Amino acid sequence: MNKTVTMQNLKNGLIHFLSHTIGASLLVWMFTLPAQAALELEISGGSAIQIPIAILPMAESGSAQSGSRLHEIISNDLRGSGMFRIINTSGMPALPTNAAQIKYTDWTALKAQGLSLGEVQQAGGNLKVSVQVMDVLRQTALLQLTYTVSPSQYRHVAHLIADQIYEKFTGQPGAFSTRIAYVTKVGKRFTLQIADYDGFNAQTLVSSNEPIISPSWSPDGSKMAYVSFEKKKPIVFVQSLYTGERKIVANFKGNNSAPAWSPDGSKLAVVLTYGANSQIYTISADGSNLQQVTKSSAIDTSPAFSPDGQWIYFTSDRGGRPQVYKVSASGGSASRVTFEGSYNDGPRFSPDGKYLTYIRNDGGAFKVAVQDLGSGDVKVLSTGSQDESPSFAPNSRTIMYATRVGGKGTLATVTVDGLVRQRLSEAGGDIREPAWGPAQAAPK
Image 1 (cartoon, helix red, strand yellow):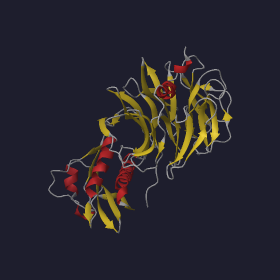
Image 2 (cartoon, one colour):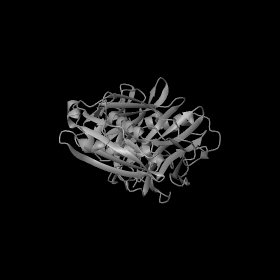
Image 3 (cartoon, rainbow, N blue to C red):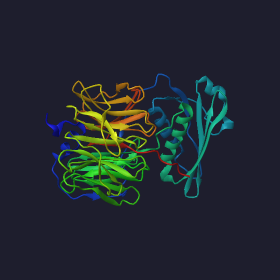
Image 4 (cartoon, helix red, strand yellow):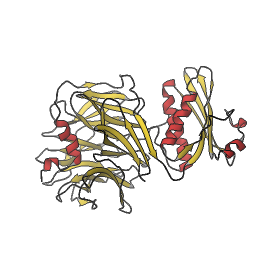
């Protein structure tokens, strides 16, 4: 067995990118480029039982011009979750703009369970967004929301409203107001992008003719760890998303790769060839206090902290084929976690600690699998043959991953039950290495 190509993560990460020419200098920007076009979104599947809801255009006062767009964004969020059926209101002669105008018999005839309506007002240089979500059957208010934000935040407010509606009707937090990171490759140019979960408002964090891989969000969403090849070898950087300041935190002898944050943000697990073969180490978030965690003659890679911070899960071929193992975050003996299938790589936890996702070699095809850590049950979720880099949404319901369609790299999502799938693609380039960011605080 050739250990340099046993791991899917290693093969599609370090070795894949090492095959490209390493050239021009690295350019670092912190949200200075114009927002990129949204990723193309395709949705398939849905829950067996969908909640019928009407999302009405918002009334506008003053010079506010975002009301109609807000209801479209909210509708797209809820429809894309697969949990809601958005009622078509285009044929209705008049639509209410406040609760006093609602004729509930009209909406019960359409079998609506929920009704969202509201107003956008100009408030100085800001927008005041007021929303009511009504229970049609009980004729009572379920939600009353008010946000005052800058005009540039209207999409974020729409996502926040969709989050609140989703949680009210399903009992689970939404993830529409979150962000994602991913790497695009156009020609010889690699770019690390940060965008809304649906691909809008994409901004460039790092751009280079040299490979960029393994983006990893800090738990508070303020920093990004990633691997850059700008110094002719893989080196781990940490960069502030607010100031743009970046710092090398792992530049040891050999390769430095696969950064993963501890839940409290104080440490990073990294993979180093500091001795000979790849092993797991931890470092403090500032790059100090190097500690070796695994000690084996095998390739140990793809670390991920458990949500409680007590364990590091990782991939190792110490048993002959890549499987997922776990070890105490302080080091010690490792124990095997995956037993179904001959190849399992790249573990990532759901934030609620209930699930583990990884890449399974399923009959020669690399697919996303999810394991219920309570029951041990494993389900293959994706349908591609070259899927990689799975990452959970903050609400633990959806997994984003990289795949290939028509020879082109794209991003896709699938719910943990496998019922709802989405695909995001960008014209003119490959997309890979997705990482779903943590939940964000609402603007006040």
